[in-house]
Length: 386
Image 1: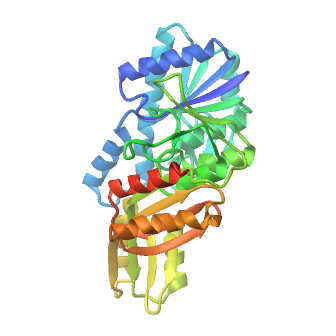
Image 2: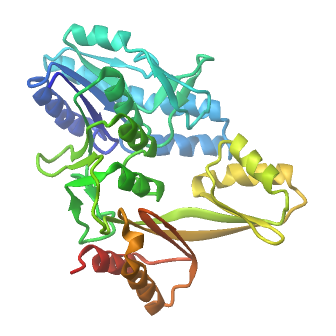
Image 3: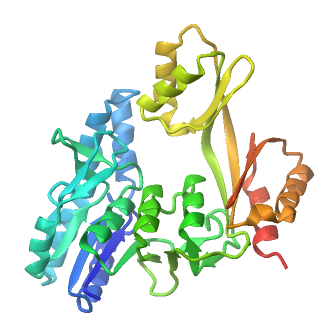
């Protein structure tokens, strides 16, 4: 191989001890590969802490200023890792997103990469340096710092893989691959050797914090070779690829970070447009007889309520916390037993089903609340079917 991209998440670089583990892994690969580019996230819970501190100053912080603030976390990690590698005798240089040539649109807090000018990257690599890039960030045409959204360092890594025509992109975390469910929730979660881009996209869209959704889209578009591995183990790993899948359940995802909003307004188009213009991701926008109903992430609740209060002060707004259970696997909706088995288990626990949505690779069930023990029973029933 000539060039590889390595991305390390926040748990992998959480402290100086773990940074040493990462440095040794980078050095090991540098001995085998000519060009090594490393993309890093902020250390540990740094981003969460910065968000908390900002919200202590303002319930709805200015989004441009949030990007200024949050981009600092990745820069700290990049510089610390570069200092460590240089001390160990391996020439390295840290670059911010904009120094690495990453140009984005102007949607603050969820910008999209439009172009990467690789001149600086290529120049540093030609000098034999390990290049450490601060993930999750870029620069817009106004020369303002932008961020790509939570988990955006994954997208930085895959975008650099495309731009540099790298052989592989490794996404390292504290988990040794992609699992059939959150292993912190489900004791019998099964590691997958391979999963298709389409199925991985459904997992990300369902709310699992495994890979950034846009990195999967980019990987599929450019047919990139992405491998999810553990920073702290040499075994395991999951390849995300174009593989055509058999009809079987691959993953169960519980998302409890959703709010359902109902507003007694008949201005369907205007409400939807206002949400889009505020860059709010809306799920399942529905028009009822005398109201509108849609779902948002809990993290956007203050922003959305402020928008609705300002523009539709005369309207009544109702909020409801809901859980979403997603069963994912290519072609599973053609197997009637999958949905039947899930509904039977939910009925056994007297869990009322609010809505069911089907697509080629996903069954999505909305309920008011579902306990982890019930999710585990559903997981074990579907994943270990005989």
